[in-house]
Length: 285
Image 1 (cartoon, rainbow, N blue to C red):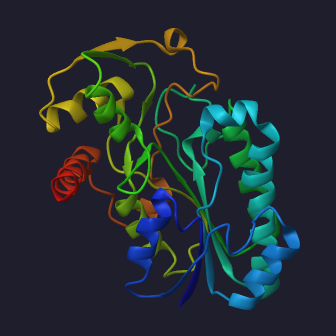
Image 2 (cartoon, rainbow, N blue to C red):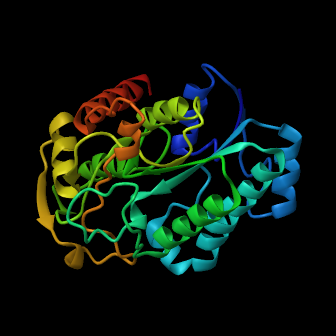
């Protein structure tokens, strides 16, 4: 199968290249190849490549940045997704659109399934939902993959932020009233690889198993890395970030399980592997 990947130099994109290349012909693209916000350029490029599937991982993911760069958020996350979907429609290619737990408002108080009502709070969440709606409206052959709290070897993420801050500070305050599921990008890439092998189109929540608060997550990171640092819980209101965030955005991988796929491993297990990989990298450096 020929797979075109957008955003191939991103954190998820680099792992998707490794995983998808095992069984597919992968064309890795970045903005240098074509600009997803340019409708004609996007259609021309995708028509030329003629992929069977486009995995669209390019996005504007700076959640707080989206609040002050609204036009850019919608142009990249919504219009960009529309353009890719339009091109897929013209060549009858399937599309994978990477979405987010932030399409939910967090008020349900328990895990969200794919069938729950969406209500994004932030510009980021609203722009990603707009992208979802374009994909659903334009295509029959689509996989919308909602995921959360991504981390991996090839990009800035919460884990590396915590580890870097621990080198400069004796104590940290971390939000303890936002709950979600940290997800390791190699595990998500493996899941996407399995998903595209069958025409089981629709919306899928895909995250590592189990959940935690950012505070508990930070404590676990330092515990695994054997770092002695004081971590203090704080509230969302006290932390005061530009973008509103859902308090409880755990995603129940309901459709994934209904299709017979095995749940992804617990986030704690994946995190231990990731920190071991970081330690190996630092030794090599």
